[in-house]
Each structure stands twice: as structure tokens, then as C-alpha cells.
Length: 340
Image 1 (cartoon, rainbow, N blue to C red):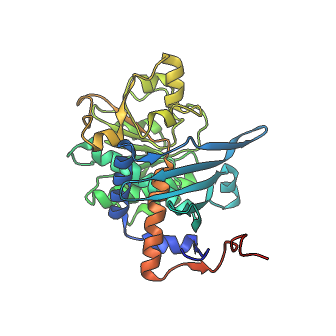
Image 2: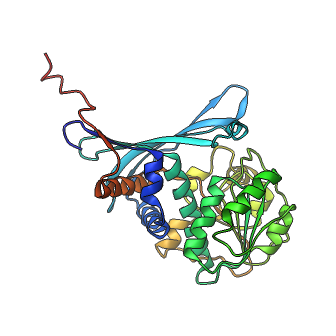
Image 3: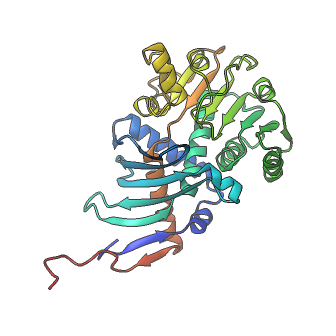
């Protein structure tokens, strides 16, 4: 933007811009992972703002720069307040700022929760596709019936239109029933199950997107050999489960913190050798897709800011093409030299 102008994209505008573009979004996420794995990014650790006597709610800052074909810098400021669900509000809300990599000046402000949900789901779907390594998707199980897993189901369906049965579980039966109804148009058969173990036993791919803050799953013995688990919520499994599986992450340094299951496993084992590689390394051909055919593979993505800014830039480009968004003229002040 020139002359201190600023583009503003609202949430509903971003929903419209990204509608039915799941395959394009997955490709953007793929290229962002490859650029990051190739050393063409700058990604400080995210910063958690927490509140006294409150272990559930938080606001997180994710700054990032992504080079290669992207050339974008920015930050996402995203909150997660689980009590919002009882207020009939979404758990997460976010705002994103994109900056020029030439001048550093802010060029766009975007509603960030839609981009955050879609990049998270696209990352999970890409991981499933990569780890399946040419195999069919088969039956899918979802643990946690919120926005993230709904988007994950949407992205998996976009990559695998002939998906088998979708089985879902949530601690809130009413929430599970609502989720089932929303997914009915994507999958021929959607079943609500009452036992998490049935999800593990009957699904080739399992996606977890819960609000758990500490491990609550210590047994995945009913998983068939070769099962792929997309551990988006990061804190569901005990260290023993993690240490027994084939582990793939998005970024080892980022995921080994903030009391994730991977972090707890590192503390238990005293090393990180149980993590085989990153998804980006597989995409670049530096590591194989699977350790072996028998292992259960767990993908644990911390959630990288490079994905947010890559997708945010794409949304801005679409907005410019479709004349969508609001340009705020002269948002930045004139130079102090020019001021009286």
C-alpha cells in the first residue's frame, strides 16, 4: 500500500474469498512448509499471554517472516477462551497484521480466526495426504467437534472426495449431534460414537482438536498398524503414547515447549530422538513418509506463524483481484520531517 494506506479485510470477507479454495490453500501451506524447512523463514517462538489462576484461557502472539516466493512478514494475535462456548461464541478470535518487507510499514489488517482455522486444517490434511503416501484415506475419526475439526473434515474431503465413514466424538453430545448435521453434506455416512476407543479402532486417520490442557489419553492400542493421528490440539496424549509411536512435527524447537505432549515426552525421555522428522523434511524428500508400515504415526503441529502470513497474503491478493476489503487512506502519519 502506498502513502500510508491500509487494507482491512473482515472475517466474512475472508470467508467469501477463501470459499471452495481448499486445494489452493493446501498448496500454499505445502509451499510455506517447504520454504521454512529450506531455511527461508524467520520464526521466533510464539509468546503466550496467560492470566493468574487461569490455565485454560490465553492470548498468543505469532510473529513470522517467510521468504522464497512469499516475501511477507507479519504477526497473528490470537485468543483462546474456552468459556466463550457457553456464551454461544466461538472459542477463538484473532487479528493479523501484515508488513512490507521493504519498508516495514503495516500494509494490511485482517480478521485472523478464519485464516488460523483454515491453515490449521490444511496443515492436518496435507500431513494426512503426505503420510498416507499414496494409500486411500478410508474411514476418518474426529475427536472434538469444534471449528478446527470441521475445517479438517472439509479439507480432507477436498483432497479425498470418496472418503469412507466419518466417526465423531465430543464430550458434549449435543455438540456432537450439531457437528454431525453440519458434516452430513460432505460425507455419505457420519456417525456419533460414545467411546473414544471406537474412534481409534475404526479409523485409518484420526484428528484430535480438543481444548485439553493436560494428557487424558494413555491407550491407543486399538489403533490398527499404519494409523495416522493428527494431533492438532497437542496435549491429549501421555508421554508413554508419544514415545511408542512414529512422531512427525511441524518444527521441533517450537513443539518442544508449552507442556505439549511432545514436550512432556522430551522431559520424560531426556532427549528428542523419538521425533523422526518434520513434515517439511518429508515434503522436500529429506525423510521418508513413514518409518515403517506397522507403526502408528502421530503428527504434532505446534502451529507456525509462517502459515498464517502466507495464507493472509493470499487473501489480500484475492481481495485486490475482487475489489474486496476496505482501504483506509493515510492510516499512517506523514513524516515527522514534513509536519510543522
